[in-house]
Image (cartoon, rainbow, N blue to C red; front, side):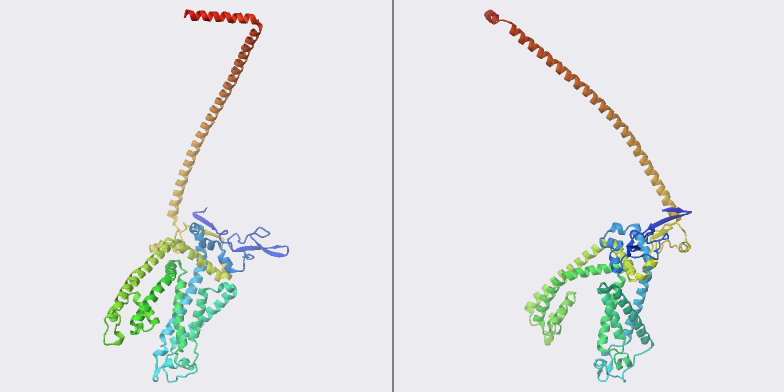
Length: 532
């Protein structure tokens, strides 16, 4: 953070979290990639732009995508890293420089294609819904060489316009998909890409007139109409997948996907219950059209599971009509009651409980999922537009939070204080208040440090005094111990001298004297005993 004049400047350095480019260096006749060249220059110049000679560290753009630091953070679910200010600013930079233009342009083109495709199919009738002779056009549209000069012509300017737009956009998209397959090879083969190829191919095959009758009346062949039906459904589902990449709406699509995955794990149990009841209903009521075959009985049982029981029609039908009669009432009522309890109450509520649990788990990680989707979106855009990556990549971003631009002033005239790209930017007054708050906080921290330093000095003085006291105590203890040793030595020498004197005097007296002395002592003892 720097001060430049009256503006506060915040500089973000992304060099270590956006490491796509390296410098080619000649060593032993070979070109190797290093962080710095012979002159010490990195892949970015002083303005933060990629140098012309810098190249990606790998030609495989999928590898760059999966090994990008942002992608690793998202895959590892490191919320503390993804929510860091530097990472968020890098995501915003990538989105604002390239991501939003590519994404919104591609979304707009696809939306135009989808609307034209759907409108074209809505403006022409189905072959089974057009009368021709004694039947319908469906009988004629199985033959690619059939002519129908007397059939009604449904061509008009709008149909021709929509047909042209769909053909052009679908052809351009197929060329783009072929280019992606050429650059990415087998990594291109994903479910989403295969779905897009099928949609565009189905659209072109639906628009093309394969028969003279289609060219005359604009009615599609039977197989074209079935292909168009499936293609339209998948095209709208693909729009849902396209919207999923936006974090604002993608979290709800993610909830749906998690609930669907849970249902697929539960589908075996669900299917076994459906099969058991559908076969039972087939055996009891196969005289009724909806239970006449096992497949139809399965469909009817599925419909009954969501609440469409038709109790009166099943149990109180017309007795005189064979198709409405019930011939096994004794077992039909218990089975129907069991079906109501197990399927409509227990099983459906179990599915609802599982769905609620999945939604709760997604909501608990909503912020992490949102940031992960942002990472995937910007990196996927860079991967698809790899030839523009170098032009829009930056290693530094200078940001002036308290600069009042004309756009800010214009928005404030209408009471709009929120910004589009940087929602956390504060104005000059807020910046001054924050800087003053930081100064107060720094002053308080400085006072705390001074107080801590005073306490440390006081404790140091006490420690020095205590150490001196211990040293004096140790000196006195040493003095006392030396005096004690001397006294012990003197007392032991005196005792030894006394013992020596006694032994020498005992040796100087004759044996007879010793006996007399002994006798004398004995007599004296007897006298003392008699006196007593």
